[in-house]
Length: 203
Image 1 (cartoon, rainbow, N blue to C red):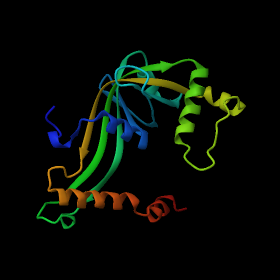
Image 2 (cartoon, rainbow, N blue to C red):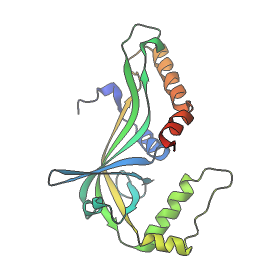
Image 3 (cartoon, one colour):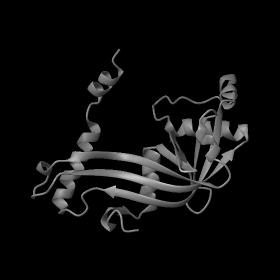
Image 4 (spheres, helix red, strand yellow):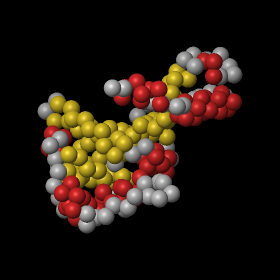
């Protein structure tokens, strides 16, 4: 594949997995009869299945995307790492405006998980992975509300067949400029989003 350029292609699968685990909310894409189905859903990486591992997820049973999460139907999941605009002012040398980003594209074969107990276990595993506080919430798999929830969701597995890392991080610049761009991306990722959320959630 010629795009993105070689210096923006991530070749270390560990960095792919790290991105998936750090930014698990993926854009899941499937196609049928020229119609595109897209769902935003957290996906958990499981290294124990297949050459590259698999991704486990759950969606609402009324989501029409379910029809394409059947036996071995192709799917693609895109994971979105940090990104930001890089001003020429960031660099120590003369440059043009650009955008830096970390993206992971996963091609996979989708299969449905029909065992309710397996779905509950996967939800509990996902919750345990995502709980990072000093006093993490532990999902009680026997909770009646959990058992009721399973009646309204569909579990699925995506066996990874291919992967691409699109890591555009000023790799073609001088080391000093690469570090300056990295610091700009870090700063952007740390920016306070209170004003943004207040604006879109205002009553």
